[in-house]
Image (cartoon, rainbow, N blue to C red):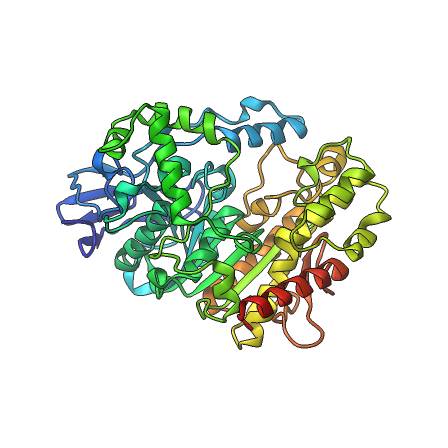
Length: 528
């Protein structure tokens, strides 16, 4: 018997209005789940709650199973180990801290495990009758790294605004995005990471009310590959009804090109088995016996540069995401979508040249046009020129296109552009980088990063919009600048910079080229 339907809230006592001393607890049938209060607040947090059986042994590359494990006394005070991964995101954090003058040691080493299907919940009150809106965060990291409790993802500030905040884990890389011919007759053949996300959302449908949440008012939000995965869920019947709104940060362009095919995933599975000398019959079963750390090490040596994306498995995805978008069959849920002004700037080499700018335009699948080159040719900073091309093709322009299309279909969508650059030399060197908006969205600015009153004010505004959207399906509320949906002849974007304000859509020339390219594809594929 799993967790579903077995919760009973225990009473806890708070002293004053700012802190609680008693331990928050939930009765799970014969089990007792212990949480704790976030220091100095009345927000209860339960960390490391299992939502599926550990994907070990025969459950590696298997559909996540409802959790059956029963414990008599469980402490949910510690985050569970992160899913198996290379240390790319940890190193990114350490590099960023160093840029801002902090020690790399400000980030502890990351503990990982294949047993990692856990979620974390922050809640203002453990009252099932409250029916608070629920916000579920799906982290990014190229679907090969990242974890649900990175420092900027802690949910207490959002919970203070009157929502139940949840962050979830899912299998990554070789563990979450692989297939094999031996899986052809299995109930699930690929996209195990997305099935994990669906399993977590189903668990919340059954159980979040016991944490004070309303299972009929769930907003999923994520950044980068996390948002990409949400877009795939919006395109899938398997996730229908599991969430009721979405916030997509720095995504949209993923999947415009050809999505990975099931055959490709299967052949990569065969290649992976071959790396260990497993050939022919039972090679997948033998691969399941390889220790997780060894499997990860060998796989990453071979496929280090692979970007893991949802595949056309015939189950979660029956058509490419953008075919579903263009045919008007995306989930009819309201959403916020946007990107940052300088997504690629800090990762573009400092010594790029005008020739590199031309090559960036020529290699672009949707912006390869003399018009695009002319639009960026006058940039004296060649890094900025390349950043504009990459940001426009992969995030900025597809976000605008998707939002406009959905609004044309009477499905509400709002667009933002985040361009705040932190004060000082360090801020200027990285600009509004990929992921820069996250501390603002969660209200969790690290102590080592330059943060001024301007940053805190902007953070309060963004938190306000995100919370209001989760509560009502519309980001507008009193006290915040009006934010119209991205529709009509005068489409407008909310610019998050030193002050939130409405602006015309950024980079209109590049996005015009993008729009023409997509419209030509629609004519060719018949998805008008």
